[in-house]
Figure 1 (spheres, rainbow, N blue to C red):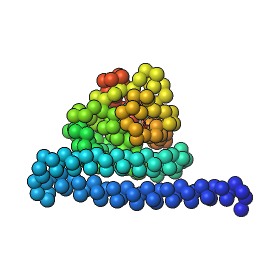
Figure 2: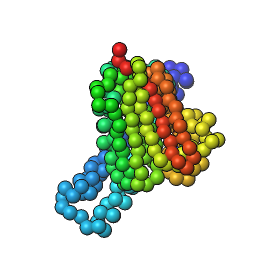
Figure 3: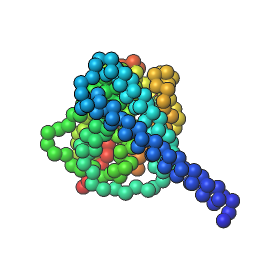
Figure 4: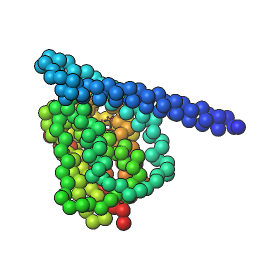
Length: 241
Ligand code: ADP
């Protein structure tokens, strides 16, 4: 085996180890997340105002820890999405959005943010997508919308069909993106100064990966944003013809 191959093998082993460890930590944190949710929902009896407020703090801390692990997993995966390992299938976008919204309900609740899904009443076409990769996109965009929004606000997730594409958008009323940042937002590791101030947890790798994944699907990613007012991220993905 050449030196280069040995290095590659060692690096792959390390990537694998980080991934296994991070997934185990995330599973443990998810367990805690569900216990806190049960308590907050009153499943084990009514809570006093003080008990509820302390549990909400625990929920916030737990969600932040999950956020850090997700960033770590993402950074670990960032090479993956640039390779051509995609397997496309028929995907129900509405169902995927509902799942993602459900999974982020703890995070949204701990920040007093309401997430609202807007969709047409008629049935939409299926998307032609790699489900696991698409999930990374949805996780990132919803996480950002919640993370960079102001407390007690609403995040709107809109799904619609436009010819042979499904269009999904995430609209928040948060910090917005600076004029200088607009050109750099999809670059690897770029974070706006305001975003760094608001949220210590972040790597600036998420949107870079989002764009790569959407491109690999033959779709487009873009945004509209006003500093201090809010941001909407959009992407399109081809329908299953
Ligand atoms: P991270 O959130 O880990 O910093 P991302 O790659 O997901 O990394 O986002 C890169 C940067 O884009 C963020 O640091 C932030 O400056 C900006 N950004 C992303 N989403 C939003 C949003 N919804 N509102 C305001 N800024 C955003």
